[in-house]
Amino acid sequence: MAFPTEPKKHDAYAVMRISEFRRFLLARFFLTLGVQMQSVVVGWQVYEITKDAFSLGLIGLSEAIPFLSIALIGGHYADIYNRKKIILTCVSLYLLGATSLLVLNYNFSAILTSFGILPIYIIIFMTGFSRGFLFPATSAFMAQIVPRELYGNSSTWNSTIWHIAAVSGPAIGGLIYGFAGINIAYSTVVCCVILSILFFSGIKRKPIIPKDKIETIGQSLKTGLKFVFKNQIILGALSLDMFAVLFGGAVAMLPVFAAEVLKVGPEGLGFLRAAPASGAIIMALILAYYPPLKKAGRNLMIGVTGFGLCIVLFALSDYFYLSLFLLFMTGVFDNISVIIRATIIQLLTPDNMRGRVSAVNSLFVGSSNEIGSFESGLAAKLLGLIPSVIFGGSMTLLIASFTAIKAPKLRNLNLVKYLKIREAE
Image 1 (cartoon, one colour):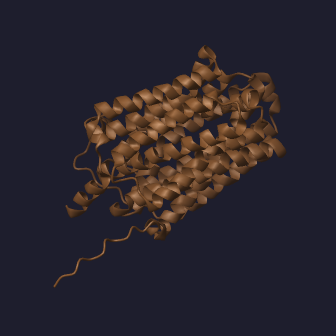
Image 2 (cartoon, helix red, strand yellow):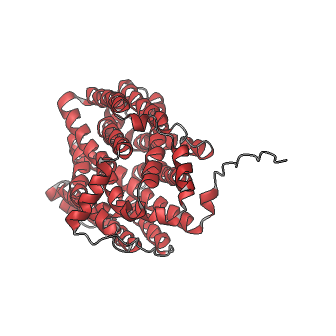
Image 3 (tube, rainbow, N blue to C red):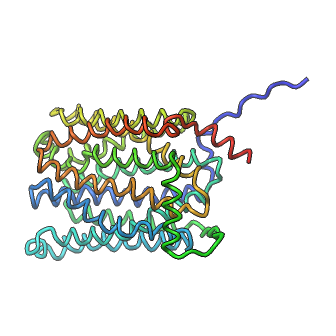
């Protein structure tokens, strides 16, 4: 007589037992920590010099222009060259940029007096090129470190560690800037990027999956774009996240909210910047035990809708602790969509196209942060600060509704069922 076996218990820490994945997470943690610290320090410095919200938007545009120009090519090379070498080269360029900002403020403050914030924009512009190669190489490299059945688990922990760094970075950056000065803040950024290089160096290089046929760069990019645009699930997930971040992001305007609406200074700005990532960490830890994959499509729509609603309410708040809570909730809702989208891309992308699909993902999602910063700055200049953020949150709600109607395959997606089918093949 056969007895029914117990269902296999979900192991929330399965992927953390892979040593190279732990090194990967530590490398991403320190890199993200440094980048987030630099972001808040540069944002506050630029606003102190200019007192202009539009200048904050130009920071994002300065990085987005080179990033958008090179991302697809970066994806192509991530599919044909040593991904570890690409990553180390790009992080080294980040180190050069962080060191340049430190030197600029430490020894050559007269340059800022003579040329204003232009040198800062130039440095950020240069780091945008390295990011265009780094994003697809990193995403594709992670998929080679863990087995397919742990993609959902790895996406959850990758998101968790990223958000922990995103919490720590702005808070540390704001506090160091406020209490120790800008030079110590930039020095800490440099140290974080160096640690990231050391941990990436400890991971073995992975073989590149050979292509079925030799393609030119143009043919390779066309293949990657065609794959994404013919897949309703991937295209819908990327589009939904892109427009939500593009219109719903209020982060670029936080220096203005901190200075003029909430009146909490750079220390308060650090906590405001950290609040969304704090919510994301809490949600990520919950999702590690209860993955949102069974009704992934529905959960994705709920996440984006909740995010947009919290953005609208944040714009209406002039109470610091309520604003902190609402930003915290944007992180809670946003991380649901982040984990689902990352898992979709990992599961539905062939191994030999991961670099190019990750590059398209970076165009949709990664660039939307910088373009969203520019959009927020421009909208604030044209509509006023608070109306512009209300407009952005409202657009996010409309986009979520539109996507739910136009992408039924995404709306009804069950990733648990899909994973079982792939495992059976």
